[in-house]
Image (cartoon, rainbow, N blue to C red):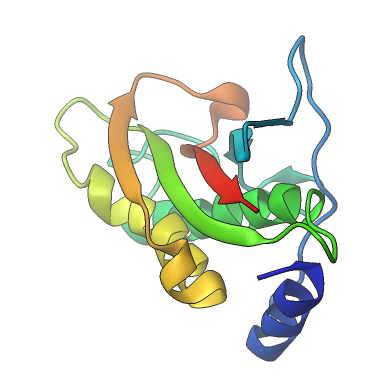
Amino acid sequence: MNRIELDRRLAELGIELPPPKAAIANYVPTVLAAGFLHISGQVAFKDGVPFAVGQVGTEVSIERAKEAARLAGISLLSQLRSQLNDNVSVIRVCSVTGYVHAATEFTAHPEVINGTSDVLVEVLGDKGRHTRAAVGVSSLPFRCPVEVSAVIQLG
């Protein structure tokens, strides 16, 4: 799927990509190495502010955290789109790593990160199917409930 095909699919689904976020510290948002695009961690912003803040399981519901994961996945797609053109296309999403700012007793990390996985498959079809880790952590930038990163093979 090249940039034109991606834009067509996003339009069909009614998904509008935000502009790709710039790095906020000493790193880069993406690195393309040996045909693999490594995308730095993305959190969910809406209208320039975090979509949700707080710990999943105490301050943020599973449903809201899953929506945050979907929005973070849309940010992954924005970073991906910035690297595509007529000659570069998606071969497949290889892996996604999802971090959930979770209460100690919270164990539904995979359900939350399904928000990201679902949007990648919805947009990219079988090319969006990937390996994945869903990990609970004690905090995330901006007190966001979810952060996701990805490795995507381009060709």
